[in-house]
Amino acid sequence: MKRPRYKWAFILIFILGFGIPFHLLPKELEGDDFFTDIYNKTIGAEDFSNDVRPTLEKIIGGALRLFTEDVFENSSYSEPERTTLRVTGTMPDGCTIEQLNAAITKMESYLSRFDEIELFETRISSYRNSNISIYFKDDYEFSGFPHTLKSLLESKAISLGGLDWSVTGVGRGFSNALNNSNKQNRIILEGYNYDKLYSYAEQLQQQLVNSSNSRVKDIEITSGGWRDNALYEYYLYFNSNKLALANVSQIQLYSYLKNQVHSGRLNSIIENNELQNVKLVSDNYKKFNVWDLKNTPINIQNKQYKLNQLASIEKKKTGNTIKKNNQQYSLTVAYDFLGTTQLAQKVRESAVENFEPKLPLGYKVFEQKYRRWNKEEKTQYYYLFIVIGIIFFICAILLESLKQPFVIISMIPISFIGVFLTFYVFDFNFDQGGYASFILLCGISVNSALYIINDFNNFKKQYSKRSVKQLYFKAYNYKIIPVILTIVSTIVGLIPFVWNGQNEAFWFSFAVGSIGGLLFSLIGIFFYLPLFLRQR
Image: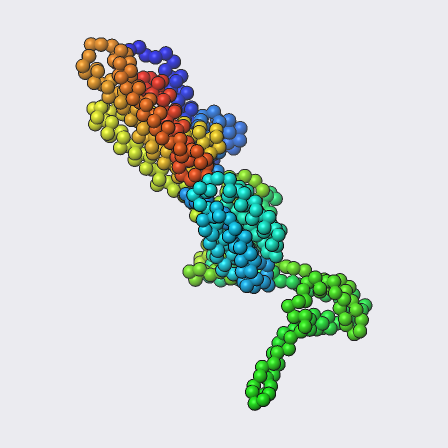
């Protein structure tokens, strides 16, 4: 069996196709040892990092670089669940839970008209927090009805008014809130002294503004949580010059306002031998609102004034709800970031890393953790190497060789190239199912090569005088049909998981990753398996 021509060219294509993880190397190392010094003067040198490294990473990074930078970094946690519409309602400050319940009852009555709905659950915890979860019957769950109902609910929410509505679950989320304060970037500080903790939060707030090159917007200090839990109050600002010109004192203006909304108890009286409580209530109590204050003439000393002639009123944010957990106060620095998700992540990590040394004992700062698959957990990736190690020993025992198992294992990275490119080219989300596809491919891609090589070894024992090339092709012809049928049947079996699209958590990414890897494993079987075998 002659040495194939251009063998090393094919091997180079394989290596560069998979990728050399040069892009994962740090820009510089910390320490004073000899190796660190050499690394920082070569790979970590500024000229190399700015001029050479970006181009070199693209050349040798291969599919691995495309996957890690564009797919893996943007991947998100997903969890299998039913198609669900969620309607939330929030009342403004000063309202009651009874008022919110009345509005939610109208929305429930509207939902009761639709027979396609299996059930809906309503939860109301306060006047600022209500939620309706809507579930559909099996026949309509994957139809167009959830989208139709979402559009109808949006129209109903607008017609009801009176509170902030949001409708999410399918399609683009809807919200009629004018000041949506849900901010995606959050850094949490915890400590035992609230006043000091707040001062540290202000320092972190200033640090983020100064170091972000104007990318950090609408930064604020909150008590945590995704909803805006801050309280708002109306501040009355007196215009001293206008009050003096009108010969009106602040006390007179304040007394007028107090009389409009007064409600207080007086001394009890005895009537018909019975003690009765007395309460003095203004006729405008719970009727006099901000609009009246701004537009209704104010009668002082038999003269009438408009509020803007004497003062101004403004709605301002006041103190946060004090949150304490495990004997520690907690504050959240929340902000919007103008830039990519990767850049926002780097800014958060850098802010936490730089600010942490400034905190004394008893205080800590960290990024907010979200309920998701922890893709940074390294232990799960060690399992891939454990699987490969087990496969190596099984193949070594079966083939009675320590060299041929390496040929079989080489089929694994070839199939991984298919996974990398599938998620990159088609812009699919990579979640737990994608990780599971790696595990599956470790077994199936090896199984195909093992069939052929095992027959090849048996033929060499039976026909020791025949050429190796003929024996390999004989083994190849015997097993290639079962191998292709195995791969094709596996792909066909995975197709149903692709039908529902990316909304199908786990199974969709598992299916597309496995299909892409299996197709590329055929390239390994056809071209690289005979290339890697010994030539004698």
